[in-house]
Length: 202
Image 1 (cartoon, helix red, strand yellow):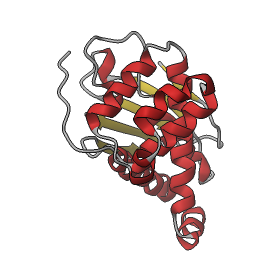
Image 2 (tube, helix red, strand yellow):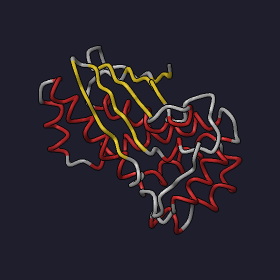
Image 3 (spheres, rainbow, N blue to C red):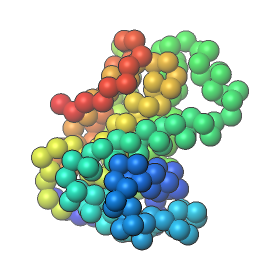
Image 4 (cartoon, one colour):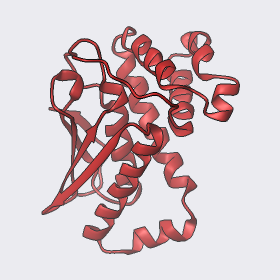
C-alpha cells in the first residue's frame, strides 16, 4: 500500500486526546511518547503529520495497546468536542427530533475528524436510521503494509461517543478499513435502537 501523507500539522484535539490516552493506558511508556506529544507541542498543537505518523507506528508496535489507546483517545475527543460546544447548542440538539438529531451530530463528528487531521475527509450518509460514515485519507490507516485488524479505533470511538452523548444509539461498527485494503475507512452507526456504547469491527 502506498504511503502518501500530506504535510502540515494535526489538530490540537488529536494531540491532547492521544497524550491523555497514552498517559492512562501506558503510563510506563509516557516518557518515550512525551518527546513527540508533550511540552510545547501539546500546548500549541505543533505536531506535524510526519511526527504523528511516527507516533502511530510506534503505537502499532505495542500490540493490543494500540487499540486500547486509540479507543480511549477517541472517547476523550468526543467528550471534549461536546464540552466545547455552547450550552445552548447542546440543549437544542437534545431537544430536536431524533432523526434530525442523528444527522446533526454526525455532521459535527465529521467536522471533528477534519479538525483532527486536515488531510482527512468524512462523508456522512443516513438512510432509514442507518448511518454510513466514509473517511478518506485517514491518518491512522495510511500504512506501509496491510494490517490484519482495522486501525480506525479513534474515529469509531469518537463517533460513538458523540452520538451517545446526545441520547442516541451508538451501536457502531467498522465495516471497512483502508489499512486492510479497503478503498476507504467505513464506519456504520445504527441510529434506530436504544442508546448504547458498543464499538465493534466486522
